[in-house]
Length: 338
Ligand code: P6P
Image 1 (cartoon, helix red, strand yellow):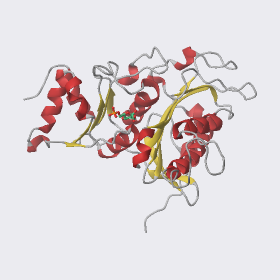
Image 2 (cartoon, protein in one colour):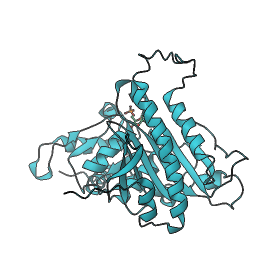
Image 3 (cartoon, rainbow, N blue to C red):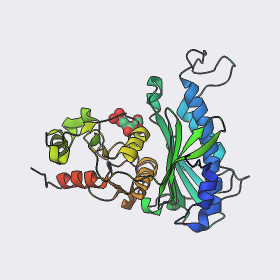
Image 4 (tube, protein in one colour):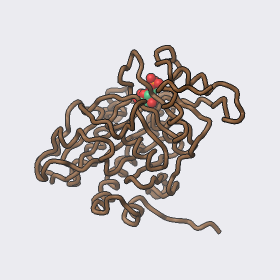
């Protein structure tokens, strides 16, 4: 008889070991606020496919309600869910250029929340999985005042917690506080996120690579040589690798976390700094993958050691199994293998 564990997200955080014990109570409250937002977004994402059938006109639906683009909807839900709990002194969203300040009527907290409300939302029309990504820091300036840029522009190594919600065949919330990574699958019956992936460890190596090969001509030579190396026949090193690319970062990263291999979004002449955003795509995913035993670099250095200069700055990203990330790093340094 298998042992069933009715382990909810809130209980797991309270009972779990933590790198930041002082954050236990606060963390479980803010993550449960976040999980509420995730449930509402999941409901909307899952019926989005019906919008054309149900006569949603794009500006107002058959009930005369204003229908927003899904990513703005997700943004609004997250702000509403996170701005009044007294946990944050500032929010930063992919959808807003500037820091979102906490309304004066609400208590200010000691954390900063970065989030990408609905990454990959262009995939919704073709029913591909999309996701929400979040990253939490502790403020640097004194309590009691609104958070400022100095509180926001911190290296990824300073993250207190990070995670994502993947809206796919099921809705799964994955988070870390730095030591271990855990996944919770939404049980629509209970409306609870229940522990489904305890202590996720990324495989040390796997024969899967994930990159938009359409950009091949724009890459630097070391990367081209690495990708060509992966395609050669060599049983001993498990080559050729398989290419898997959804084009939705959370879906590609979730597969990489569970199956291993490497996900890459390099810089190229269209995106000299890469396409993905450092603060609410690269850093949170890097914290998760490193806590699971993997590695994440920008091609030259550990991504979580990059000192951000701007809220929405972009970064190249190479992330996944330690062996595979270290191998592409070697190729990028010009030490190709023969
Ligand atoms: P491309 C989605 O638009 C996104 O921001 C990420 O989720 C995804 O990994 C990437 O862009 C895909 O970009 O250029 O391959 O379509």
